Length: 116
Length: 112
Figure 1 (cartoon, rainbow over the protein chains, first blue to last red):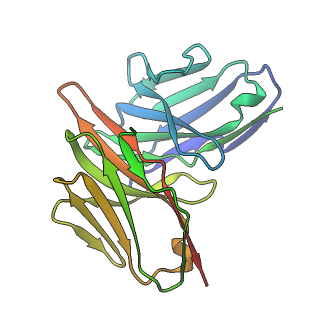
Figure 2 (cartoon, rainbow over the protein chains, first blue to last red):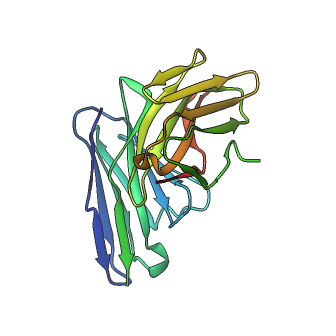
């Protein structure tokens, strides 16, 4: 199946710093990528839809100034958690849809963020 | 009411047993359906797509019932490695865009 690479897989940072997470589709082009957050023992929560060449669409309750999304190419989307706080500690997962088959999402391996 | 609903479980069954999960969806505009599997602290991985005619992949069988708006997953001869959370995923499309909606997942634990 298609491969989505997410980096870093794990990050620990101090409160107040910003963290950037990259999501790359390695063998296909993706006009749309998605960013999810998952707290322990809870379901995936869609944060935003990242559209190549345009602004991201954020879900209700997700602060766009806090979670900056950039989708500058067909294979790369980035999520920056600005001024991170301990409550932002979570598992962040990206996914991408192949242009050729937009019904299936392929997931990155996730980024575990711990804010001290 | 959630757009996609699943029994959270956990289902705790012995190795070798057959286990089935259902998932209901509320929007009749939903057009494609999937089961994903998520292991603890890992990303979801596509298990199988679900078609009206039903589809089978080894020990796994998926069914779609559009009239009653539910999909099912049947696992036969369950293995210890089947222990995971199973996510029901529904894709609905309208004239402007498609939206993928995840259920909250059903936890399955296979015991020796």
